[in-house]
Amino acid sequence: MKKIKWTILTFAVLLSIGSAFATRPKPLQSNLYYWNGSGYMPAGQFGVTYYCTSSTSTCTYVLSQGVYTPYQTAASYTPIGVTTPTTKPTPKKEKQ
Amino acid sequence: MPKKQVALECICALLILLFLYASVSKFLDFKTFIGQIDNQPLPNSWTPFLVWAIPLLEIGISACLFFEYTRLIGLYASLLIMIVFTIYTGIVLLHFFPYVPCSCGGVIQKLTWGQHLFLNTFYVSLSILGIILQRRIYLNPIQITTKHSLV
Image (cartoon, rainbow over all chains, first blue to last red; front, top):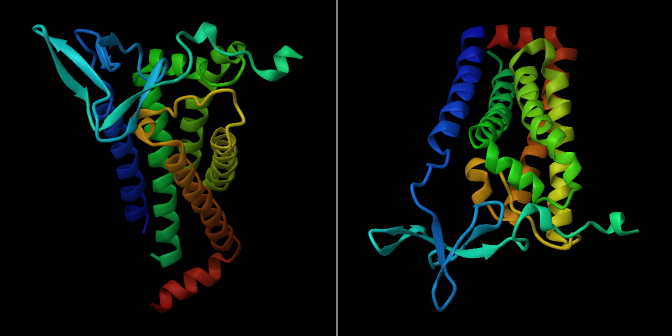
């Protein structure tokens, strides 16, 4: 009985740690860009200045040997609404 | 092993999977996580506390769920934290904040806020079910042992 319990829980622990390592973002050698309709612009930091929402287009591109190659696909570039964390809109309660 | 016990172990395993995965992902990309917390519609002065408190709390809950002695505390803690996350997700979806922040944590950040709400609601239900099962097993240990021996 205890063997089954320990097997299930140990499997969960190992799977969660393994998955976290497997899905961690790979460090990029170069910056990411997005297509704004007329040209490629620096994308900024994922999760901070932008995120990718599900769609059929390409969210970001990576510049490799002078060619912009799709990097984050099946998504569209969505600015979060702030350029840097320091320029975050002030919450209402702080204004009062 | 009684079916209820197996179900409880599976519920705890799923909760551990979520909390441990989310916390380890945050620590593996800590710099981005700090930026993401800064980007939430919360005062930036809370960031130094939140960036440590959230993942450590998640690890603590996982540890509580792992051991039978502290499991009920872990289940109540996971219910509480999931309710807090669900309310926060609901507030974001209702556009209560001046802008929509990112949804964060490993591959979970790829989910939309709507999908996030669904995931959170699922884990709230799972925590409630876990509490019910744990209390039943704890209050009627003899009955379950008898049933098991009959099977």
